[in-house]
Image (tube, rainbow, N blue to C red; front, side, top):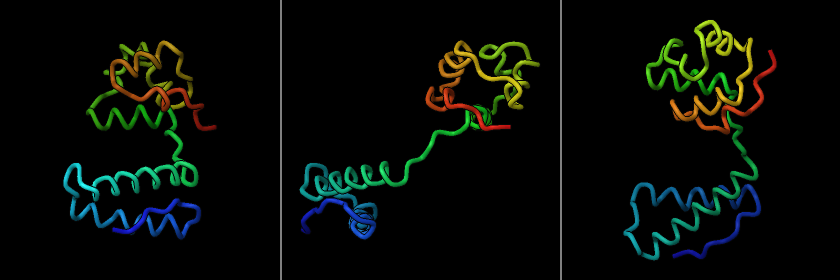
Length: 124
């Protein structure tokens, strides 16, 4: 078994990706040294990716529309969280910002992550 090295460069990162790839095709046994190596490699890769390839949460309206698509929701279904139907359409069209109570209800009722809902909307 190879030694594990810190990821300092893009080359190190690519080597770690190649090393970890083998474990996806041949999953290591629980509690084995291979499983420990796999977990350490994944942790190193995650730290590198978080630092060098951050992924911003989606725009709040995009997050709402995504959840609507996933769950087969209509604008009318959002009324308990946002208010009257015209207000729902204003939010979905970017004409009205979400309020804090709307954000909490969207999270509570539909499971939309708070970090997606509190991000400033895209400039119109």
